[in-house]
Length: 277
Length: 289
Image 1 (tube, rainbow over the protein chains, first blue to last red):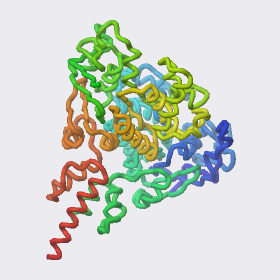
Image 2 (cartoon, rainbow over the protein chains, first blue to last red):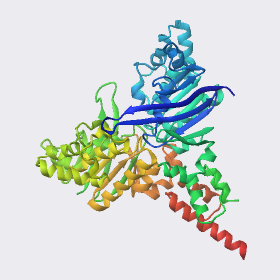
Image 3 (cartoon, each protein chain N blue to C red):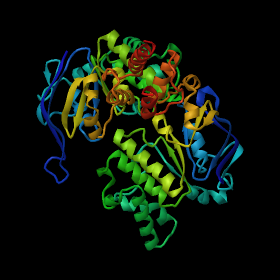
Image 4 (cartoon, one colour):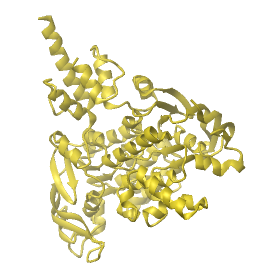
């Protein structure tokens, strides 16, 4: 396994006005492997977004260092290289779409790279096909649903051919089918194209899909591991103000009532199997 | 103080090539002290409907009657209507602007003509009702956490003393604890102030926690209207609309299909655990016989 993102003991301080200085990141060590799917969860203000923004040099650590594909984010000469390697998608699709036609929006990034028109066209088609939006090439973004807009935003990042996709609560504003569309797209890009995914989310059922879940609280990583391991620690998660997936919580309650139910149940199917044993 | 919506239709960009029918012959009645969940896919007309409830949008066809006042009439005291029906938009914390939390929340009642003193008293009560103590009164709203800012914004609407509180996606972007706190405060507000709460949400789990009645919108129409438990029984139908049901509702359905005698109408984690425990206990009993 090759490490693609390496955060080495990083600190980041914000000036919180009257409240003095706040350590948004308070000594974070994190290595992410190529083609890994990592979910980051944590309460509001725990440093999730701050950490994500360090992964493509939108923010720089005040202490420690971040390497993206071996490149130090503090080196200004490597900035564009780093941003091309790790692309970001944010919460609100309306803030990320710049053009009035879908294909032009996706072409914006490659155009700025100064690529030839044929190559730009090829990348636009390929990126839209990767998010299954080829049929909407000529549509205006405002005619799209939230989930479709978010997929166009992802295509815009893909057109830069990144190795890492960092998504900061990409489904917070979407309806259930929009959420599903975006999550399926992200999973497919990870599995089929081997793109490394870092997903920040408040939805525990999304985090369950990752290879590894990182739990943050007060600027630190408090728990990390495969979803099954992390979510079985119901009390730890509760203490930092998080939830577990509903089936896990039901299993946990049954266990507390004295029933022999595995504590690391994650999905409806698994719980049905455990109860029907 | 009921709200009556009668055969309401609304078309955006009427008589242009961009015509969109947002509401299509919607009729419904909202009674006193109800807890309603309004769900539906993006673009189904939820926001257009709720904006009619306090006169932000005037009816094109049909009528909206709030407290006996017909909002389709020309001369309507909109101030009075907006005091009765409070609307909290998505991401309301973006609308905070004052220097202190107290000033921000007192802004609404002051505009309604209350004295400085009365407005501040109302602001203090409203902040308490959303679970914010006096220690935040003099702080800048921008120094608070996301969940706290959201509650300050909701207090700003509460301070105007609405009988109906409509909230559009109030938990979006909040962490699980912030989400649970907010939902709990909404439920107690309803109990203590006899308010009607209308929750517009994409989260079926939130709706299951708060609402007693669920309205489902689809393509500008009310596709379903009934008690929460009943509406969530139709899981296939809701999924076909691009919605869903809480995971525990799916769980109970699957167990039922496997022949387990669980009640199908559990919609919360507590109820589901109860039901399954009962089945497991019965199973143990059999083995011992």
